[in-house]
Length: 287
Ligand code: 13P
Image (cartoon, rainbow, N blue to C red; front, side):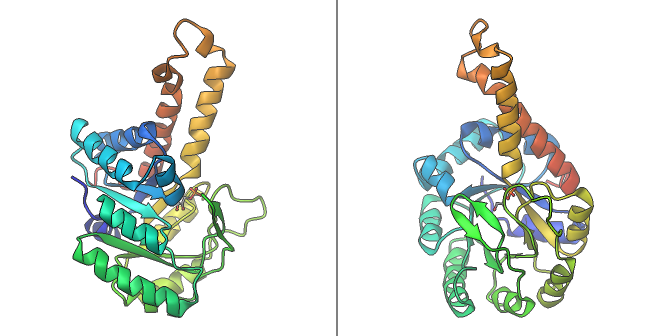
């Protein structure tokens, strides 16, 4: 059964670790993340961007696939199905489709409008038993058409949004979606500490988890980050393993073209990346 992410993230704050959000794209992705979480006895959050939802034919397909898969795979660890960087309309669609958690990304609106829309969605999400994430400041780079300039969040604005009753908060702290450029200045721990000071025990979310060095991840967790989003890194591992298989001509040997064989190395590569992240985030054995 899907659960909201509230409880697992509260526990993560208390236990000083973070739960990974891994974005899913298709059946192989979903199966790889669920299998790894179960093997490692770790809670997990499946992230679905609006673009990925559309790609999979709609949020209802995603929710039904995830629920059926959990059932067939006998998944017993806590799993939340979460909308990533949702629009106002997208949030309503996911609530209707049976997601257990949503993110409303109103960071591109003036703060008053972000507050207004987040406030309404907090009420609706909570009435339906879902958890809700909001965003202040913006995550740099691009993810599925969502482009951010990467401004660091204003801690006073974070407090305004936190006070609306959101369950966890994404604050821009110099993090970027996709690969980090060579001249990246690193995370702004100054901003993170100031945000934490204003928001207390509210679980904080670190987007752009791909390519952040281990020591920065640890420090962010120390400063209240309890959810870390990873998307690009699984895509890169999948692509690399699939490329190697094809470049070695394995699809041309026997029935190597069978999709179950062709996609197997990529599937294993996603599992390895998810395992590595769960170990680094400290969520192993915390289910
Ligand atoms: P990366 O693609 O950089 O891992 O970021 C994922 C993310 O933040 C999803 O919202």
